[in-house]
Length: 272
Image (cartoon, rainbow, N blue to C red; front, side, top):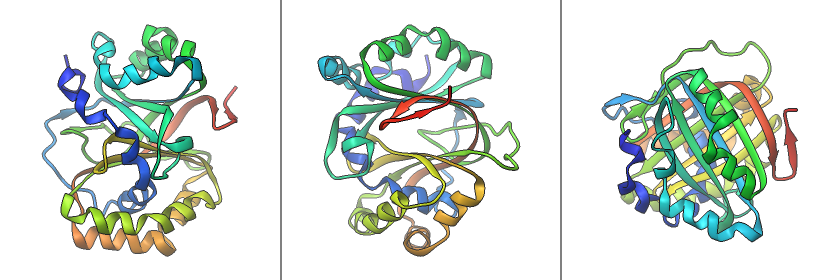
């Protein structure tokens, strides 16, 4: 069983939603890969990623809370699974200080596309999310570039960057406590810019643990739109500060080819 499927990871996600408060800054700081920390990579997280975004129905809130207690235990027998992270979110799936009582997510790394598609089509775990969700959106992704690691695991790059069309990104980091105040201080301008960024089709803040371990998942209309966001204004300042200050003890930035995006998130339908 992969290390990240152990019950010992439960504690990291209790209160995890609050960690997503400053996720836009993460997107900026690692997007040029300057701030990524080259922590030792101990194993592969696979070549295919699945991101599950869920707004739990009001009648199923207790079921949703139990996901944070169980962590990745229900996924322990999933074929081909290399990495599993149970994640909270900010209020309304965003980056505010208040955690969401209903929105949460999964990040999963699979050894191959067949295993990932089998999970999407036939997993009883994902079926349970569907049964208890008010909204559910699932992304199937193949990495075109990857820098850094998540709990010592790194995604394998097995795709070429898209010439045009949508691109997805995932950024995660463990923030050093001594840099937390400065990191949070720079977050609001980055968040405001992300909300107004042309070409941003989907953006969500996701938290692995309170305050210091967080992630951002975004989908963009094309590479140019993403680069324009990451390399201007408050974003560029944040990148430089994170690089100069060595804010992170571990980080990972991945660009993905978007193989599939289906479902509803924050009222917007994606895919078929």
